[in-house]
Structure formats: C-alpha cells, structure tokens
Image (cartoon, rainbow, N blue to C red):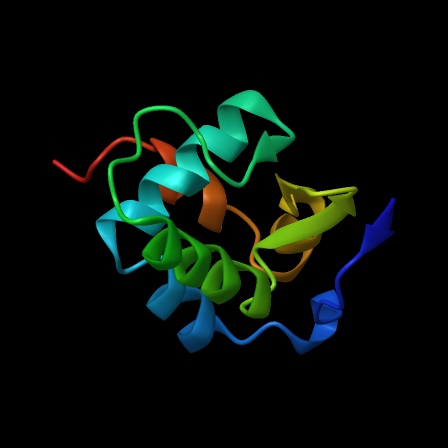
Length: 102
C-alpha cells in the first residue's frame, strides 16, 4: 500500500479547510469518514458522477482533512482527526454534530 502526499498538520489553513467543507457532498463524506473510519472512494449512497466524487476527495485531501492510501486499484480514505484536532481544537466536534447555539 502507498500513501498520497498530504500537508503537514502545522501547514493546515483554516480558510482552506472551511472551503473544503463548504460543499454538502464533502460534508457528507466527512461525516461518513468520522463514523466509519477507512472508506472506499465510492461509498454507497453518494449519487454524484464518479469524476465529481474524485474531485471532492482531492479537495478534502489537499486541505489536509483526509489521508489517502492506494491498495492495488482501490483508494481508501480516512479522516485525519488527530491532526485536525491538534491544529483546530474543537473544530471537528462542532462541524460533526456539536449542538447549535440557542
């Protein structure tokens, strides 16, 4: 298995991360990664064209949100939760289901 290049945690940019999560499809991918761990590049129930989905994964990876491993013809993604939590404490909890302000 090999990994694709990804930014270091100290290089994460909040504006880039926010932009990456500003799309409903990418936000759903984030939720699935948080719940399921390693996820294939073609998760069930995501109904966008394969090329569009590939672009969404690229944006998440380049923002530093995901780690991608290649295993033969398969690409597997995982949320880089510990790195994101260390760089932006509480951010993922808020995005993934923290209670909304009253």
